[in-house]
Image 1 (cartoon, rainbow, N blue to C red):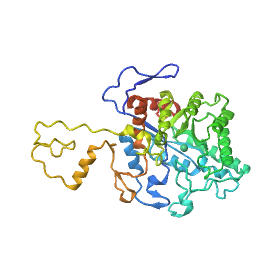
Image 2: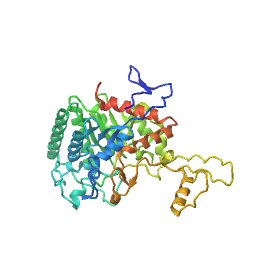
Image 3: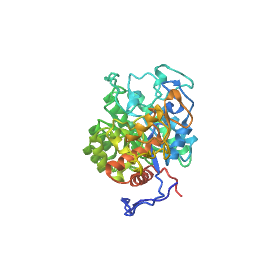
Image 4: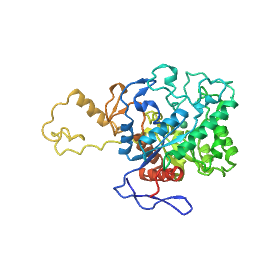
Length: 430
Ligand SMILES: [Zn+2]
């Protein structure tokens, strides 16, 4: 693991970029603060059906290969929080967890919810609505689903849910040493996805969990979600922790940030950190917001299996590497050497159709793939699955942030690493 640090913490805890350039042997190091490894998709299960072998180990290994040596697995329901803790047990020192109820999983607080809030999916159960619910909610709205309304809050049930969540957290804190549970969450508000849970129930779920978070001794850092709900989000945080969040002991991060610049500044002013993933680079406006995030407030995440950076995203252009032009040939009769080593010197063999295709592609600027990517139907050991985002892509997030800000990837990495270690304490004291 790289030990070089290019930012320094002053005695007042303020992060200052170092004046010197990083040495050339610097290897980036990452902590993915938001990765849904408890999603069955990382076990090869898609919508309740097994499509390929469990490749969670491969996912963790690819992350480690790019320098992403710490993963904070998101708990977004009772089941995923418990599953995340089990995964942490499989990868001690690498996988850490959070525990909480995501706004999209908050209908357990409503009168219309009929299953038990802590109901686990039985192993091997395939197909059907229930199995599909195992997946973590995708990061975008689903316009095909109707918006829920008039669900009504179930107060008696709330007491049981909060008490069970408290027990889960307290057991997790004492279950391993050092504890793998590093944050309270994911919780918050998501008004883009009211089809999973109504606004009334989301507000109730958030404030009930905030009260629990404030009562914990000691408190845990918060892993927060806020989408299209800024005013209510800040108001409830202030009600729980004071107008300046002065009673928030361990700080918190607002992950998967896609809000406006003024919302982002308001959150930074409250001392909160901002988590950035592929969804944060969708539009030119999104990228302008990223540009304004202060490095001492930045954290990086992938939010896999969701939120990958796509070619349609504004931020994609920062990943494109223009190939170097081939060296000028001394003789017009000799073909110039190709970047892949083919056709260098001598008589060039005629190109096959496939090679021709490759040659044409090479002329276009492109985004290099670090690992092979295959469709899930053609799964193979060591390859990534198309459309399933995973933590090794965190280097793309750092590269885009660096590109937007016009600074080095190393500076971005080191700032995010330092901030994350400071808040979540994921690196054991030496
Ligand atoms: Zn989220």
